[in-house]
Length: 466
Ligand SMILES: Cc1cc2nc3c(=O)[nH]c(=O)nc-3n(C[C@H](O)[C@H](O)[C@H](O)COP(=O)(O)OP(=O)(O)OC[C@H]3O[C@@H](n4cnc5c(N)ncnc54)[C@H](O)[C@@H]3O)c2cc1C
Image 1 (cartoon, protein in one colour):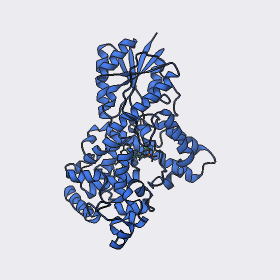
Image 2 (tube, rainbow, N blue to C red):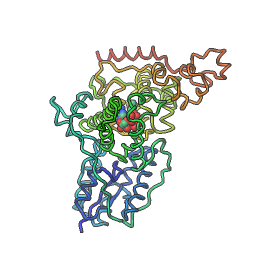
Image 3 (cartoon, rainbow, N blue to C red):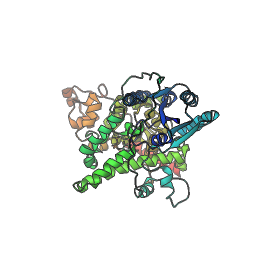
Image 4 (tube, helix red, strand yellow):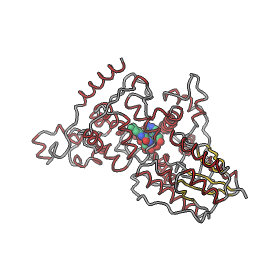
């Protein structure tokens, strides 16, 4: 009887998992394993979420008389020990794209090789693999540095339809207890079933209106699938496939199709950032634009603390930072404003902001976090000649005009009339008494004046770029 192991990493699902299908096709018995060392790279919230996903998968596999084994200890040794114990001659897994995942893969392969066990890596979670898009590139160099050129090519490549379910079929009676990291996940639920339900809900209720609603943080018009994607509870191909299927129906309106195409464009952006980090892992530490190296500066501990705790005095920025702390998720528009405020108004180093988010975000992912922070800091893949400067007051007035989002996350402002919740500093003395609201007693005073800070940033930027 041929036996192999399937090492689940960040692909915690049984459906549309090409690497798992390859493992199943290669042996009569496939045992599912997870390396406890893989918890080490996650923040606290993510550990609880990953553990929740594993519990769900275990329950799912138990119904099929199969199991999921936790391999404790350094990944290579622990997986090799499980392979020896279960009589497996090969280990399969989905490839990693990030620097750390690839290093880990090489280490695990080397340890397994000592026991003559082969590590086979298969396709992971992009709509199109980085190499597939890169091979169409006309200009020299690996991969694409700017998104529009990437997207022009990406959108022309036919996407593979999602694959079938292919669960491991081996039952290991020594599967080991899962650790308990608690269960405070925030807004997303762990596991494949939650992600599938969420996708159905999104496709049915929101995807057709995505263009109208997604930019407004108070409206809840986005998919909320980022954490499920991060842990592979769903694959981007499944999302793409569901959108494409709905777009192909004759009764889908043109405007709905445009909306769904916008979601697909965002999946392409996700692939874009993955390939950026894949072809140039140095972007984790270094600015993508060489001219921006040496530009970023440090902020004081006090400044960082006020930003991190959502007490900058700018309601939209504070709502974003408090949503991050409360839910491990930030609405994209608010995230852009908060990150821009940190890099431009406070003059902070994008790496510091990125680290803060990597510590808290449920969907925290090196490639996505690096790519987005660099883009906002003006050192990344944006083609504009100047970094975009987002005025946090105007952005709030436009995208949260009724202060729905601000009131939800900044309780000090919840009872104020809308105009005052959007600009608490404008409440005059008589109204302060009427509302029982006094800045800065009840809400922080603005840390910096946006216009002055933006001018200072631009002057420094011009001087640096020469
Ligand atoms: C400063 C900053 C840091 C970020 N860090 C991360 C991160 O660590 N991990 C992460 O997954 N996303 C990150 N993002 C991207 C984005 O904010 C989230 O993916 C998105 O808000 C998730 O919500 P959703 O699932 O409802 O997205 P939807 O609006 O429903 O979009 C669908 C999917 O498209 C992808 N997507 C959408 N926008 C982006 C984007 N700007 N970049 C890459 N992919 C995108 C996501 O996978 C998302 O789930 C960051 C954005 C900013 C501005």
